Amino acid sequence: MKLKIAALIVGATFGMTGMAHAAGEIVIKFSHVVAQDTPKGQAAEYFKKLAEERTKGKVKVQVYPNSQLYKDKEELEALQLGAVQMLAPSLAKFGPLGAKEFEVFDLPYIFDNYEELHKVTQGPIGQQLLAKLEPKGIKGLAFWDNGFKSFSANKPIKTPADLKGLKMRIQSSKVLEEQMRALGALPQVMAFSEVYQALQTGVVDGTENPPSNMYTQKMHEVQKNLTMTNHGYLGYAVIVNKKFWDGLPADVRGQLEGAMKDATIYANKIAKQKNDEDLADIAKSGKTQVYNPTPAERAAFKKALTPVHAKMADRIGPNLIKAIYTQTGFTAN
Image (cartoon, rainbow, N blue to C red):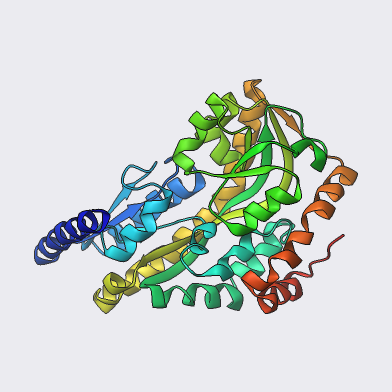
């Protein structure tokens, strides 16, 4: 039944796309699962603006935020089937698709800051990773930052032991499952759009998010404590249906590549700014107590979590992990 429905969607989409081309307008449906006022949401709108301006109306970008079209688990299949043309899924989504190398971004504390991160996402390693998506019918265009994740719960979190026994929501990622188990927590895979209600009703006890995701989804209203562990990176890959992309006129594709390049600069610039602003608003709300760990407390979290790297090396690829260590100067201490 699911495949039949998908086929109908593709058929309808193909028909509409054909009409759009005939009318001289190319439609790009850009679907994502977060709010419009998040870094990703703002960057998607900025790309829309640039794309439509630079192609002089040949391209129409329709942005669908907040899982309006598809939830986490559905959107990649929809892209591969051609029901949408563009997505910006979090990097954890590519592991279940078979590109396990992308789970390297889920490793806790593999990046200490944006400078280290960008050496990878904006360098040869990042391009090599995006190329691994092409056999799956996906063209990778860019990496967009969101921010660094921190733990939230309804109890104070000052040590790794404070997470023991808590049901913690994660994205579908074997690395994130192992991360939570390393802390004695119970990983709960759940779609992003369902997290607020799950926190509100106690289905899960806590989660991990950058401040922008937490604030825009109002999770701070149902979480009493946020500890700024900054233990993991959350970012996105902007991807398109490869067949659609390769079928574009060369001049239009070049204009869109330029628009994506500038939208990426914008996305990464506003990511830190937006997270800083939203963190301040979370603290100001008085509903969530924000705690900044001491250097010793942060070191304890890093010590507890970096063994996950070795445990997941065979899955991700030890050579890839070593290449990132070399690029960033990673040390376990």
